[in-house]
Length: 314
Image (cartoon, rainbow, N blue to C red; front, side, top):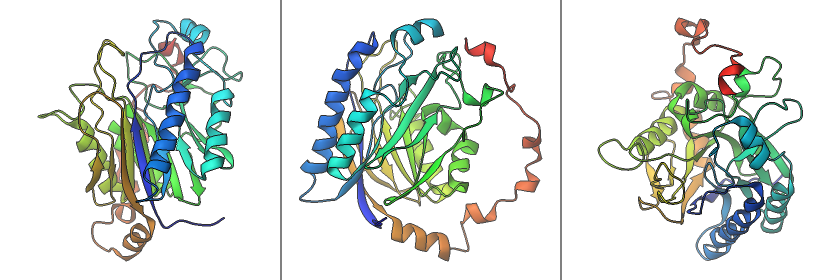
């Protein structure tokens, strides 16, 4: 496998009407495939864009009040016709696409719906991440943590020619423990697929979006590529979505950020794996991954959120 020590990532935010049924998904994929082309071909005179990231709810949001309605109207299995289309485009352009989320059904757990993003490269689907921390109480999908017989990795990290990539979704990022699992599994690029609404987005004085992305990058000494939904209130009520998609380096520096506010945006920024790997190997100070004292964190020895509490997600 060839390796690319330096390349650019594109965080793409969308502003489309909320889909009412799965028949609306294909048109959304049309638009996102256009944006893949814009990111790769439009910036080609300047940069090699190799990673393209889309936000949470890009294909469907959990707009119905029951899991049954979500399964009936919006949920899809994976792989599907849409992931096949992403695969074809990734193969044509030689890029990696972190899909926006799907509401996913799986025959192994037929009573449940997952909120799922896939990393798709020229080889096909490389990883599938299911949101571990649903935004309670608004999100009805199931956390894989709460299934007693769930046997897939909760925090997958995949080795690619553009580095070791790991993704997590929106609210997951407010739990530093979750993102640290990706870093400890070797992730060099942390991908945030997000629908982060006002007032916790990019607006002062809160600006949790920027604060959290920078903190997760710094404390894990990893790049962060974060794509946020940029939809206006009319498209995704009851919330408005401020965008602000961004790329952050391993010291927490914002390398590129889309203008705050609703609307489609593509923002690109550099990923320098050679610099990251050098710093991870060289640094004695401020190397939090090497300085962890796991045995001292005794508060984690007992579960806090009830395990296997599936009924709360129905």
